[in-house]
Length: 307
Length: 248
Image: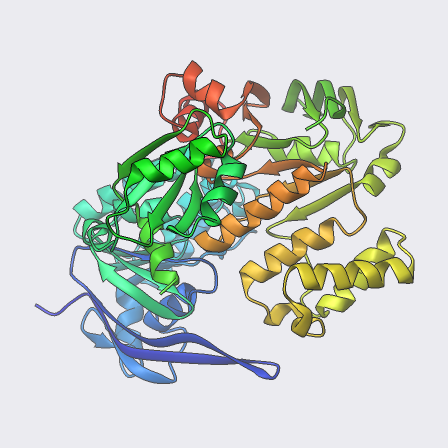
């Protein structure tokens, strides 16, 4: 069976004054049907441009792409019937009420809320009590749920979500991902972008993006297994001094703060830890503890950025 | 960090009609401290921050910011604080040099001071060759670092950072925090909000707001111990789950 999304060497550049920006530099990837696929990367990585091209709102300079088997340029009308798209910026009608927005989008696709009620129910019931309220007067989380309901109203086969959790607190982010999982169980293919590296673990597969390029594509586990060096977490009483001391030590290759710890790699693969500990104790570090750890997606992302 | 108090807040409350956005919050921030101001969406952080910056009058309670009273001396507060957010920072259509001149001018710096500050900043950020580049042509990470420096062009006692690292790549995010540490070690008080819980661990102390009230305030290590969990993410989730009022 053909894949739900396929991109082949997609290239897009923009002119900004005198400088040319390569927003997408030969992007190729495939998303399987029913997969929850994540585009992970910071602002400026090219995630939104890629979404616009796949949802037929923008045309690439070079390369080609297919969604649900249809080509994005010549068959854009077919694609528009089949995809749901939730842009990063809230783009519903602020002056229409919740139910007016829903029925507007339903009408565009020749359907009704009643017809697809079962499909959007899980999300819609949470905003239904406010159905008479103007969309502009909803809280951030409610707006997000309304936008998702509108993107789902025509039972799309592929759902594109551009940074749905940006600026959202840790609790609401968890809830949103639970919602995505339940949508996935209904058979929908989901492509979601996020700047939060920890969310990569909630996807089946991810593409790590930076500066218009895909640095790696794999399952989250596959990505972390490729980390090339042993990784250590280190903690001491004075973390700021610890970072300076480690970064100025020739034996240390990288040292990055990670919450309570610093994550470090060494120049030598089989660096002896006792000698590092000894140096740090001599430099006056108290409550020192070093342990070997499994890398996170964020460790891998930084490793790939440094390549 | 000194023992001098940079921000002192007592029973600070803000009501909009019958809705209490900020409900009698009380805390002190020391000069040179990195203070993390956390809370779920809708908990009242922005409203509290706007009051502390002198942009919104409290309904009741007391506050002293940078040595000035919130009710009587809000103009002096504005002169003595810096502010930066992810959403509002620099003017895209001005160059780096022009942004400096603009903000330096706003804060009443002399031409000579602006020139000196600009030179120092460009050198420190290794942006000498970009001084006459439009800000919009800069990568986001540079923009955010530059914007932080510009927010401190007038050597404020306190700098308020509202989600300064949102959307920034993981390496730049860490470089940004190095800048925060440097500012704090020079004695600047840093008041910062973030949705990255690893960044909460970098703060000297953090407060967590739930439904308009401060539900927890301590060092990250003490909070982690008190809640008997592994890190701030779990502390945050435990507290924020209790919220009745929600943005969702």
